[in-house]
Image 1: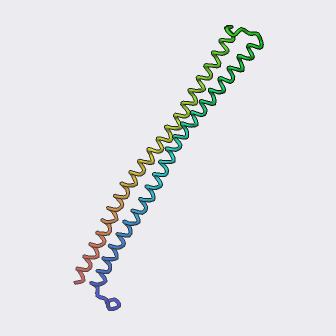
Image 2: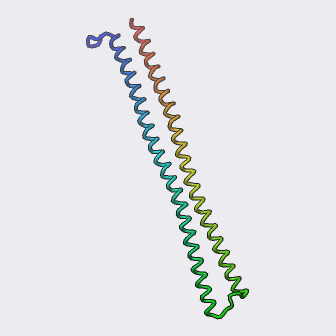
Image 3: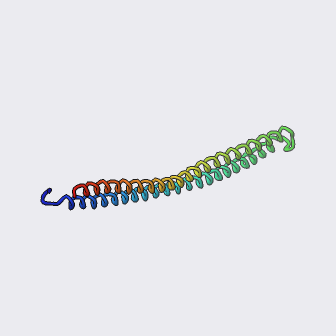
Length: 165
């Protein structure tokens, strides 16, 4: 007897302590999951905002390029008119066509770059959602493992108690 306490009493105390420890581990895993889920949701929200920002930035760049094109076109027409070059001359037409082709290519590049950035952010948001699901599965598996481990420990302690009798 230890300090006047019977082995049976000590065994029961040990079983209770194991049960409480297991419950505390499960609670800690639950809190860790809540934190991980919150973090993944915030990350998903951030990626969705980045996708929206990429789209808005691409639109702004398109508008800026469009304004620049029309400003240059007006400037070029004024310069051509001042110099006395006919507006319908082949060289002037070729010059305008080349400027227009460059403008269209620039718009396509801006759109593709913006779309690529948006899709990248949307992909990251999807990955954050998958992380949430993975965390949930890991939590369930961890809880099952913790409970199983606690039960195995309790069984071992119970066997020791039965041997004592």
